[in-house]
Length: 236
Image (cartoon, rainbow, N blue to C red; front, side):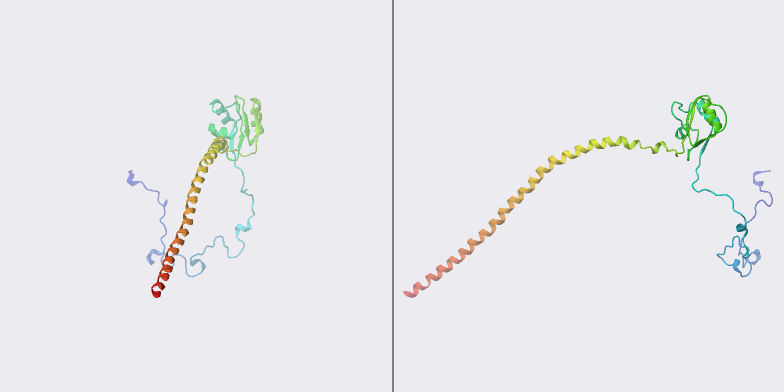
């Protein structure tokens, strides 16, 4: 036996049926659809059609119901909890909730909550906050001088807690008074500078019409003198 001689058992693989490849192939012309009829046309899908009678999927009774908004829980056994305590992964001084179990690696995701199951023994007292615990699991934890708190609230991730925005608020308050003090001192001299050029332009406009009046008077005066000189030579 060599590598190039390896092959499947006879009949393990079957060649694909190639339709419409000539009369000699056995599936030419109509391609195995027969002659005429609804099924010989394209775009027809008669799935479960039984000639008009009541199909079997409607004759059979229906059982069960899949709830669309059902909750999914992460299960933790007493044995797995005891292993985490012996490894020193959990902080027993604080309440152990879903986020603490995820951080310790006991469960991968909290989902809608944690359910405590199973039998065994615990070597230390634990204060647990879970969504559900079996009566047997509660007795084991209470026997080890611990406690179990049932909370149906969905666990919130530690990243989603609003702790970061509270630290930014005092920084914004300190910056506000500095921005208000600067514009008060700078805007007052800017307004005075704009008023001065307006006062200088006004007397220039008034002086222009005064110069036109004396020119007209000077031109009319010589015309009167010429008229007075003309009759003088006639008398002589």
